[in-house]
Amino acid sequence: MKRGLMFFVMFLGVMMYSCAISAGCPEPSKGALTPGTKVIAALAGPNWSVATIKSVAGKSYMVKYPDGGLGSLASAEVAAFPVAASGNDMMSCFAVGDKVLAKAHGDIWREATVRAIDGKTISVTFQDTTRTVVSMTEIVRYPR
Image 1 (spheres, helix red, strand yellow):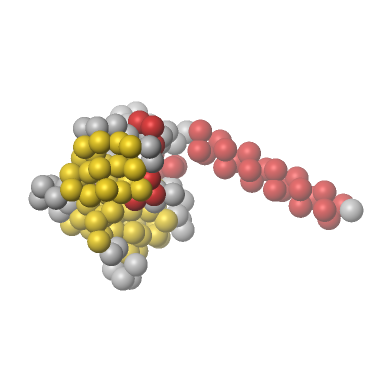
Image 2 (tube, rainbow, N blue to C red):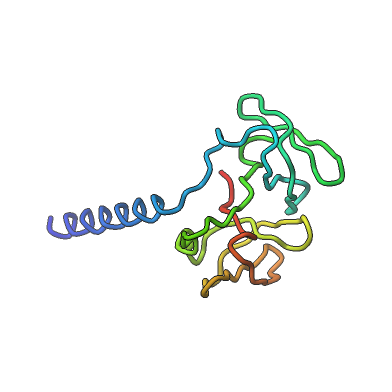
């Protein structure tokens, strides 16, 4: 019985800690993604791109890519563009092992996993095992 109670107390502590961390990590809700909003949008394969929302219909987004192309995407295929809030320490919003989208080059972003967090940068590993270091304006939580 004591073992079960100890497990429950540990579980409760972890949940409270997770909520405290999340509370300090303001992330735009999908409702905040309106026409004209800059986003990171699924492109093809593992590639994502900077895009702008053209219209919203329920949980579906029409986006315009930098080359002028359009795409109709589901909610899980769109993430708010990162904006480093001045005065906030957004580094605490990410942890080693988190699944993220990170800037690969130019307007192309890719799925990655956080490897390490150091000062004002985050080391990530892309799915193809390529590694890079990004700043807080070059990383977003993977949309769900």
